[in-house]
Amino acid sequence: MQSDLTPLPFLVYGAYGIIATAFAAIVNYLLLRSIKNIGIKSNLSHNGNGHANLVRWASQTKPTLGGFSFFILFLLSVSSYYLLPFKNNALPVRELFALLGSVSIGFVVGLVDDSFHMPPMFKFAGQLLCSLLMISMGVYINVSGVWGIDALFTAFWVVGIMNAINMLDNMDGIAATVAAGILACAIVILYLQGNFTGFYAIVFVGVLAALLGFLFFNWYPSKMYMGDSGSQFLGALLAFAGILLVWPQYRPANVAGFYLPQFVLPAVIFALPIIDTTTVFVYRLARKQSPFTGGRDHTTHHLVYFGLTDKAVAGLAAIVSALSAAVTVAMVKRYEENPYSFPLVAALYWLVLFVTIQYLYRIGKKKHG
Image 1 (cartoon, rainbow, N blue to C red):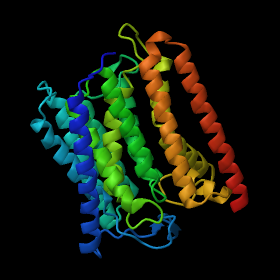
Image 2 (image 1 turned 135 degrees about the horizontal axis):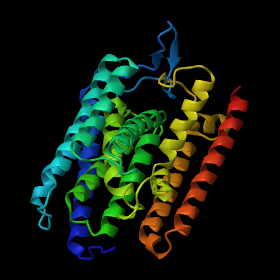
Image 3 (image 1 turned 135 degrees about the vertical axis):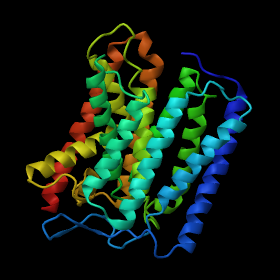
């Protein structure tokens, strides 16, 4: 894989990242100061049976304003691309439309849900619309070579990741930290591919900076949440990045049908969202409870029941995200040297992480009763 070694992109992206992080922090600060009663997320979720569940870990309500800075920095980054002195002019218009449309739908759907507390089907419809837009614009995952199967799998991926990021936004700093790790990894993959001066690099750098600026106010004890507007925006963006950068990595051009090593890299880079969502869905279904109803039964919550502090859980999420990113980068960089052992090692890493989280989850569950 060829990479761009010229210093100019590093200097430009570094300066832009610092400015964008400061800008995001200022935007969030001004939003907190000026908006007192808009975007306040209720700590209760009604399950449709006349009962209410606690859905937020913190006992007090806080404004859900983080999504605004994400979306603003995203739009600024898209516009800034045309000002770069080293931009690649071959910008894929259909991909750009798919990206702009899907993240905008995610942001608006989440914003409506934050404001009016819509039923789960409303959010699901928005997620499905994001996936259909990507597929119709030619952005889909090739897992079988059969378009119908690939389209269905892509829809499952987009809806799944958007739900996973939304569900991971259950404690201070967790979702933003995990999303930042995935975006940082995506930026490194672009560099290794030789696409460091392309359109997606500046977009990912800008949104990563927005996450860092948001974490100033979202790290424990937080002053604001990202809300569904933020989590749905991030879910659509990360699902899109996964389709373009992660899923094609381990699929040789001459392979037909399903190719198992192709599934390893996405599982590793998205390890925490996938494990948390899978665990919550399975346990809720086992309790005959709707998996779409909020609650304090996530893996992060059970780590607190296990004995960790809120800040320690966020720190552990950051460490695991960094480790997953490192494993992903090593796989992308060295895969061609041995296309069989690297997926096996990565799959073993994911399995160990999954089993460890399940063990801690069960211990925490026993302690919590």
